[in-house]
Length: 305
Image (cartoon, rainbow, N blue to C red; front, side, top):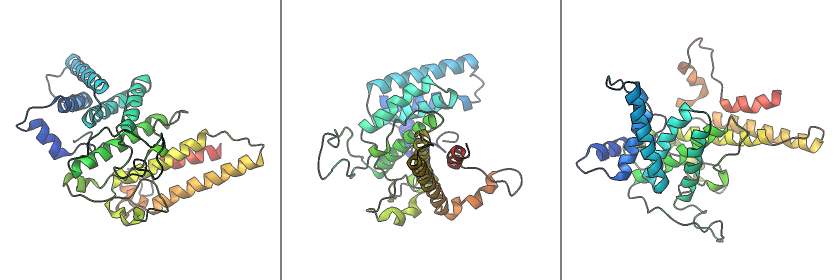
């Protein structure tokens, strides 16, 4: 909760601690989550008994237990354990070890129905089809905490998919058309078990609550939104353009301006505490130093070249 869950806030602190250290014996699913936490956080331990050999042995053993359980079980807890482990693999490797695990996670999160809200039109469409007739695997959440935990779990998988793909020429494993989710709420509401409603991930003319629920969205949700724009920038950069065809060039310029406008609009709509002008305190050096958004780098690099 000090080093990992601060930027990967998928576990509710009080619920997790009560599960691990409460009077009830640990179930296999909860024990697997604990193994994932051990594997991911061993690097931060300063225990003198953990020499290099012991550290590697505990890490490898915990990792294997999580992988085996995740392959044989389809549940939220199994997916939480795999996501926490994926943070470790993606953060310490750049290639196949992380890709294989992410492929499993991204398919599982869709198959379990975590990519859509319970009342999504993708689950109960007006005109059913083979595409929309999905099997409901998970039971209804027993509490708002459980419901929000599932929502945060999905968005963390979305993050990992974008992180691992954005620097490559690959397509995303999670397609935006499969997503019909609301944004995660502010961390303070989640920690205090204070149920709130948030706006939907993407703007839509038939969803009037996009703006009215904005006050309940925190940094996690705002980051989801800008990653959504970055996803469209990535798809834009992959599209081939015939610079000898006027129609191709005009379409490219139109899309470019639209994406640039989306980024500007997102930044302009940030709450005061997250405003770009107030972020300079996060950076060292002159007060005129400013950070650079990855989205603009990606978008404008192709324009300059």
